[in-house]
Length: 453
Image (cartoon, rainbow, N blue to C red; front, side):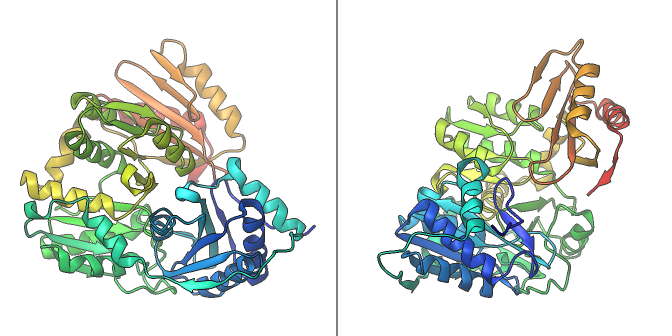
């Protein structure tokens, strides 16, 4: 049995070509088919230079398992999600490593209705089958088809908007040489917006760095363009554009946390009393918005597989994580990096307020540390130490995802990463930035370890 490294909690990601190559991609295709026993599968790929070869090998594995493959070509992860639920397929596989370095690639897997396949729901089984490299003999050879779902997908994106209420806005869009630029180009004829496009062309060599707007160094070009062109809004994406990151009219980066409440407000006005799902890392601003508009908030463990399950169980209209993953019931309960910025642009048009005003009040009311990552020797022991220190005198304690402890004026969440050997800290307060900073420093001293970005 040959070990296959790279299987994570939610997907597969590994270095090319030593860990991940055509042989491994073929075996994963065979194993996925063996596990799911599908008849019709969607495949798509991102703009990485290795994605084409790996997608071909994956496809061969599926065809040799008797599965019919519907290839949608170059796309974002949500392109595979959309095609899987919109075309009533049995599943989908996206070849992507999102925001990982250029010498990586990977795969994301869904089953029917774009339900995620994660470590708890089949990924470990797929790994076991691929490592054993032993499969059932198929009754037939699968057939490969090319399908173009882009127009249907664009129509779906536009369905979230009331275009009669849109006006001219100037929007900086930074695709980071990933795949998002192609979608902006398809949306552009339907919208009254003027787009200032930077790092727009797809380029798997990533001449301007790997598209990951979570890294502060990668935000400067978006900020510069906003200031230079006096734009109303800035949008930046990661490589497979399942997340989008927003900037206000001054070029300031807006933490994903504050966008969750903003998007919740859109859906609660459209659907009074709707359920809104959020993660436990930072919560007060979201809870305040949802409660003030008569919605029902539902907490889920962080991570797309958990969020999607809870979205389905609650039949929630919308769900958001502070990590800039946003989930929509009408989008098969999946995350999209295109729907959020379109909705925010519509809000700017309808309210006539600048972006800074739409989020400024919440930022002042609920100042937050943003997520701070530390490498520590023993995450479990570190979390236990924090509990021992802070549980006495607290108002509540919660273990939905790591450790969340609340006090009257401040709260924190401390959790170990699902995908990396890190501990992650988030702190927020009620209107007291100084208290938030003081408690953040206090917790970091207790955690120790070293900075990790």
